[in-house]
Image (tube, rainbow over all chains, first blue to last red; front, side, top):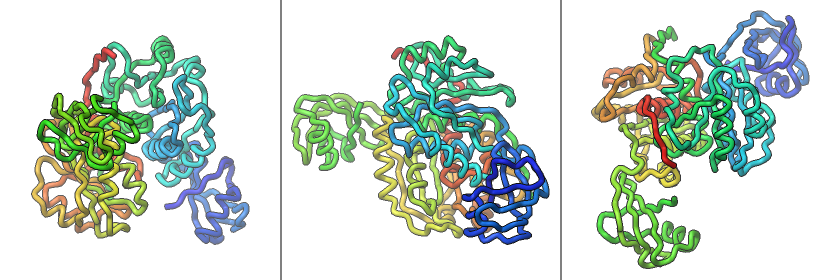
Amino acid sequence: MELFYAKEAHGSVVTLDQEESGHCIKVLRHRVGDEVCVIDGMGTMLRCRLTDANAKGAQLEVLERTEGFGVPGYHLTLACCPTKNNDRFEWMVEKATEMGVDRIVPLIGERSERKVYKSDRARRIALSAAKQSLKALIPEVEEPVSVTEFLRRPLQGIGLIAYCFEGSRVSITEALDGIDPNTPITVLIGPEGDFSPEEAAMALERGYRPIHLGPSRLRTETAALAAVSAVYLNFIGKKAYVSED
Amino acid sequence: MELFYAKEAHGSVVTLDQEESGHCIKVLRHRVGDEVCVIDGMGTMLRCRLTDANAKGAQLEVLERTEGFGVPGYHLTLACCPTKNNDRFEWMVEKATEMGVDRIVPLIGERSERKVYKSDRARRIALSAAKQSLKALIPEVEEPVSVTEFLRRPLQGIGLIAYCFEGSRVSITEALDGIDPNTPITVLIGPEGDFSPEEAAMALERGYRPIHLGPSRLRTETAALAAVSAVYLNFIGKKAYVSED
């Protein structure tokens, strides 16, 4: 199963952009009459039929819409400081998208070695990972913001900050235990040099709960993925599947 | 904190090999009398004093031994088919080492696209990740074996296989619930094209339990890391930490 992406997919006809059209027509050699599936990036998957095999703007007729296709059963915002090495942050974006995340916010902390981040790179990776893992919802990758700027936003739902605090911290699994899947979750992951004490104090003041990610010393991108895994696995819970494949 | 690795670290004197010596003496410019920490790769960390700053074979006097330094609180063997793209498998080895795994077995499945794998590459990554994440235990990376050959070994503890079985599968979190940390856990992750029905049937016959890793379609390396995360997070459980940093 191959998914294409179209930004505007409200009506009964969908046009693919140049890149997606080229992939559909030139690479995969789809012809008029073929059925192809399109995602709108907002959670809807459209089963379509190709009506114009234009390699610069393929036209499709919508046959069926499926809402919430591959959409995670929780609401997660991951606010994470990009690593010095871009590749490390970007594989994390790919893996987080595969598991399921709604929004990724690149944070610039006082101690961040990387003070500039181009979100477009991560957006391309999130799009590609969403298509590959059969999800109609592409995580929104925001423009980078400073930690303090991010913390000025009102916190909705529960906020968790992974930081080596003085004092007590609960495990992320404990912090997630029993929460309702409709409650928005925001997880903050600091840079290689951690959050500054001022940033951490502000997070607590703004209602974030200090958490730990277990006894291992994890790199920034591994910590971020451990947090996403913890949320993903928390909502899998004890559900059993019966597959008829 | 910087860790060095020495294979033979039983006595009161430790000699670093050429690579580790060069890093210690030439790169980090340690001098006689400096305290440095050495891991034996088997779980012991040795606090040492440099007695001979030989860049080809540095000599150290052992001051103190700490057993079980950074050793995971569980016993996990990850048997996973290497991905077509080596980098993907190798970042998984790095991340799994950071979280904690005892043994990694590269499996060659009937449907594996990659039929040959050089374990030495993964060993170097596991060594480096163990040092970086402050662990004295370096995961053993075995030579590749076929799935059927691996399954002929007697299963110790519990075995889990992630596969799109016909029939029912429990979630990995359910499968891990309540198990004793001393019970060895083996998790099998198949190649891009999944295990063959024959391999899957043999696994069940040999006592492996079919599991799922949630609703998302994960790449091989992401599935492997989700499984390691599930084990790691399972044994973090609800423990709270009080840090005095």
